Length: 118
Image (tube, rainbow, N blue to C red; front, side, top):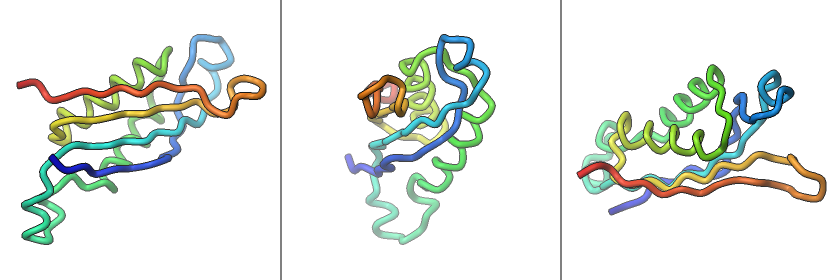
């Protein structure tokens, strides 16, 4: 298995359980490791033979802009499912962080790993 990675993607979404978090979008930082085979793309040099990271970024930004999540855990599950089901990844590691949520803490977040159903 090969990995495509996207590090420190910033996207805006409604995230949180508090009233102010449900009203004002926040920036989240997302890092992804996407398991797939890149052998075909390596041989063909054709973007159609791999997962196009530009499409992943565009899709995530557009989806997150119109959604609300109470918990980072739910957001991470949403991202993992999107990558596995819509982009054909075989395995993903999703890291999502809220920035500057607590005094003296730069980031708080969650990391999950999921694999495609057999």
